[in-house]
Image (cartoon, rainbow, N blue to C red; front, side, top):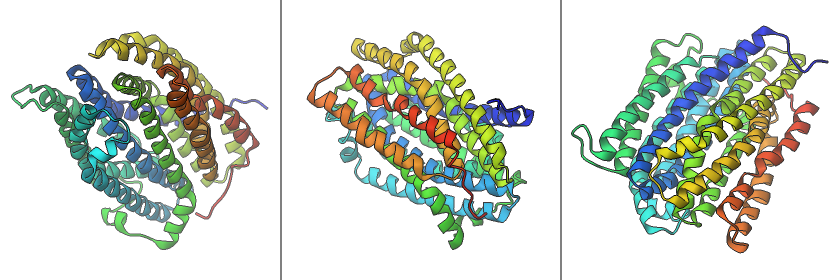
Length: 450
């Protein structure tokens, strides 16, 4: 049996969703890149402070996306089965969960900014800069949650173009305000790292307004009213948790693990913090298609199961795995080729520059593993109904293998930052062996009442 599906509609749907979601992710990351580059040109300490504060934003991102992924999986099946009432009920549950998480985390970091940042580093200057950023940016968490829940609802019914337009508006606003407020241009005061935080907060408020306006005025697929986001259907809440809690828990564990990784490198000095921030920002920028492919997979697989096509699901899964590997090879090559060019954007020390180049070289290899295992597990396996497996897999690799080995390397054996970085990213290759077995046994195809 051929590994390549011959249905043109499969490729056009998957590639269209991947392209549009990828462009949306690219522009969204452009917001972070704008902060990263402009603060990197302002001062290395400001860059490091914002990098640590943004680890909290990343944790929020992972938790909110966990709630949203549950919505996409359920929503795509309801959409495939033409059961829109279930879709709307799922959206209400997703919104309440996302808002609850964002409000809780925002309150904690607003009240205890210095204490939270001290978990990542003991550098007082970096903590002071990061705290200025954090107490402002935490007000954007609620707007971020609302925006992404609505976008997840729309994505589950294959409406993805609005996400691209929203992200584009956010990028333009953020870049302009960063230019004005960080450096004091266009008649504005020079606010440094605080200016960057105000710029991002303003952009998040605007994008939230645009998404709500689109849903109310132009959405014709979901029939969702704003009041529906605050109505909890108890049977749907139980069903949502049954599908979504492993995703939410897995994403939260992953977000905490990324924060722990930053803490390991953070205690190796300011240069390591800055280098890690640069390398990971560029990595995220060039891997937008990989992460978009996982989101597109969730919609395609979920909808196909909702339509009642398990035979098609198996064929799609085989083809998708080959597409993932191709994307990984291309992404790794791109990252390796541009690393020397992008490092010139930053005004950093020689040590930080050298470490950033080493980190990007390592990532250009491990990204091949990321490109395969991440969409295979979070896209195929999760959307097929086996949402617990990724939770167990991530917990074992990250908390029982990667973090202990990295901590030993950094603090006991006193390895170089590059060697520790290799330990931190080793799971991206190791998980591939698990993914290839799990996906091709096809025991992840599970039904639930819809």
